[in-house]
Amino acid sequence: MAQVKMTVNGKAASGEVEGRTLLSSFLRDSLFLTGTHVGCDTSQCGACVVHVDGVAVKSCTMLAAEAEGAEVSTIEGQAAPDGTLNTIQQAFQDHHGLQCGFCTPGMVMTTAALLKDNPKPSEQEIREHLEGNICRCTGYHNIIKAILAASGQDVSALAAE
Amino acid sequence: MYNFEFEKPDTIADAVAALGGEEAQALGGGQTLIPTMKQRLASPATLVSLTGISEMQGICTGDDGSLCIGGATTHGAVAAGAGVYPALADLASHIGDPAVRNRGTIGGSLANNDPSACYPAAALASGAVIKTNTREIAADDYFQGMFDTALNEGEIITEVRFPVPEAANYQKFVQPASRFALVGVFVAKYADGVRVAITGASEGGVFRWTEAEAALSANFAVSALDGLSLPGDGMIGDLHGSGDYRAHLCAVMTKRAVNAAG
Image (cartoon, rainbow over all chains, first blue to last red; front, side, top):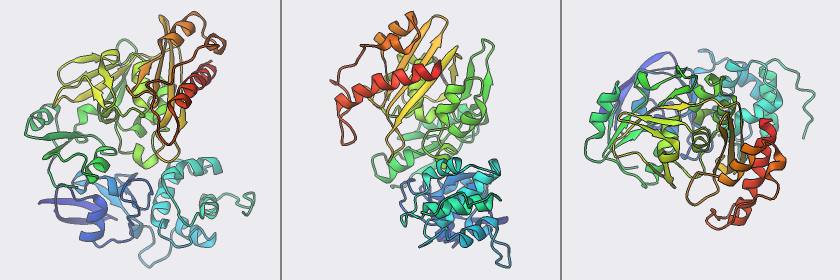
């Protein structure tokens, strides 16, 4: 066991980890930040996406020890301290961008990374960026709508399906 | 996955020393190795992370105009920073998905030499030089078969140097579930000839299609490929496609790559 220290959602966090402890396991089991979901545990589904030093990664396919000293952001850090949803989360709610909600933490974190680099993505760019995020309710259409809305773009052109 | 000791050295020298230990293995971005270890197909006693070595990070242009990429540079960084070689940047921008590209590294991909990975096609078609902690290996000598390379035990890819071609293009027929190449063809035109490397197709891993190279070196046009084909024997056959299907795709994707390269 080794000590690992990182900053998670702006707060110092530390704990004992084994070499094999995944970042997703550390966040969920040691820090009790269970908003980061583990869907497939094989880096296919993207439910576990968090940001490490500003970029989106699949936390089930990164060792906790690799995040030593890193700035980590999870879904728990997205809303304001009083619980007010951020723009992306609110857009997901407004446009019914979630059904069961299991994939949503990863979708929101992936969206946050996209909009940071590309504030006004096209529908095609959004779809390509979500390649590694799977929604088994298959609610993709409203997720695209929510992301267009979160980026301040008109969603009426996106036909209802 | 089975437990292991984790080490994260700051320098190549320390990494080489750590890899000298019993059953030690290098860890790049882990996008292949960690899933492999979860399936218990690999169980090293020590993992030596190469992601903390600053001298293995980044992209620069060498004195001879070649593009030099540090072995621990992520696909995302290559996609964003290899603008002098647009076909290579484009290839990097379509590996896996965005989150995978933020972890996976060029050195990791080339060291693993997955028969369906994208980077081996770029390295072989470009006649790249694989620089390690001990030597420089020409791409033609480096790839030795499926998951097999010229690397010795404990040898680390520190840099990859790509001569920048006059024109190039990579066409990937995506296997949509894995996002690996069902067949991927990289065509690169240099002053001294055209090179064509194909990934995803052969049971021997990435290979050069020399017949197409000769035809394209004489005439860099889609029509130069008319009548050329590869045999289905020795091609990968699985539930996604037979050997004959992959052989057919090789010719189709080569034509598309030449067309796109202009």
